[in-house]
Image (cartoon, rainbow, N blue to C red; front, side):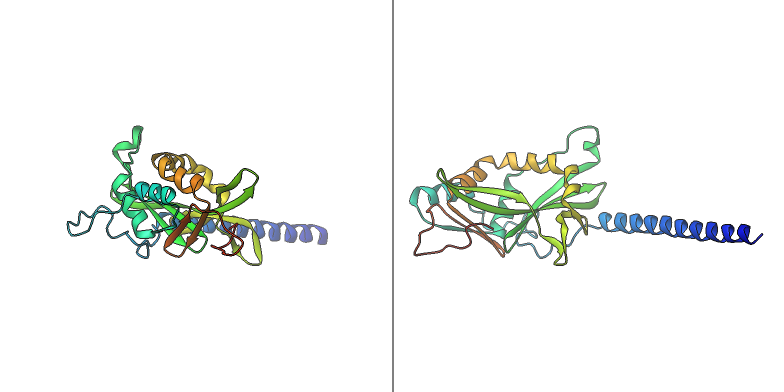
Length: 236
């Protein structure tokens, strides 16, 4: 009799723990879905307010491809601001959602947020008048070999916390920061965006010997670093 009561007690505890676990999972999923559905705040991005607003008083943006070519030809460094990048994106990027959902889903804009050593590329999508945002973090690494200096972009936005090095942050789904593995769902879209600016990226990554992401701007220089002068970190 006592054994039966003990078994029932253990069974009841296990059932309660399982119920609590299910509740926590459902609550966590619900919270995640809520933050995913909330577009991230873009007001801190320079050039955001000028995107697609048709302001006639705004001066035309610099032709960044021409600026980069002149920099390479003249062997001088160039600084490109976050605002100029977003103006170029607004002017040149003609995005269109293909397929059956094209009537209801469209890419409204693409923006870049620059912080020290990290660039965040953000896609703003509109679904029946409601905005959703997805983004990925990019970092640049420069490796010197016998063939010269090679610049590579990596999907990396750092760790969630200094005590939690893994998983690595990949980007944002709405206001929710997600690990890199979740970016597989949006990677094809970001690749298509990169194809539009293939010429600019080729000049910026392949012909520039030094590339530095700073807060609100990029610094590029076609001249290799010398021993006497240091442009910045050689790998970042």
